[in-house]
Amino acid sequence: MARDSEPSPAAIPPQLREAIRSFNHGDYFAASEQLEAVGHGAQEPLKDVVGALHRVAAGLHLRFARGGRQSTINLLSHAMMALDELRPARAGIDLERLYNELAAFVDDVRASPREHQAGALKHRARLFLERRRAPRIIIIG
Image 1 (cartoon, helix red, strand yellow):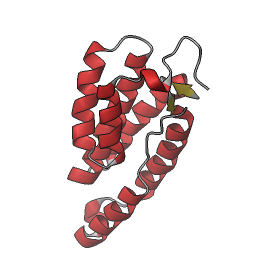
Image 2 (cartoon, rainbow, N blue to C red; image 1 turned 90 degrees about the horizontal axis):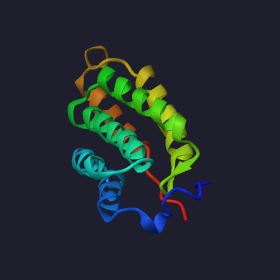
Image 3 (spheres, helix red, strand yellow; image 1 turned 90 degrees about the vertical axis):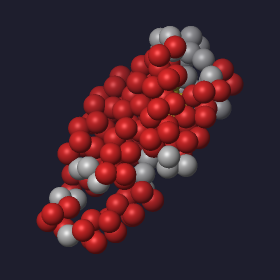
Image 4 (cartoon, helix red, strand yellow; image 1 turned 30 degrees about the vertical axis):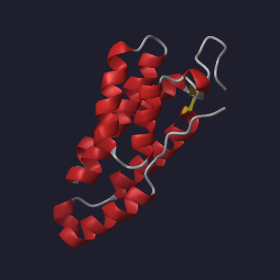
């Protein structure tokens, strides 16, 4: 649950809500850009949350737009380390759920063959299925 000193869901800045909306619609590049902008003006504890979400959005963009495997694993793993310190919730965002969804997603990516091993068509089909299982950011409250 959110701590008393943290912003309530109603206090989430509109720019962050818009970034979350972009993220949840699968527009990870736009979400990454929006989160970067929000992060520049954010104060603690929101700044840490935004930084972790930015890494998640960037990692998912690399996976789905560029087919990156190792770069995705690296970015999402770093985001998970940050989220681990912030769980279960901060700034009105369910970080426990996001962490668990990311852990499952990263495990799937790690288990996937590299593009040159799977073949281009199988790789694109796998990305299509992964997109359906991509983590979502949930605002609680």
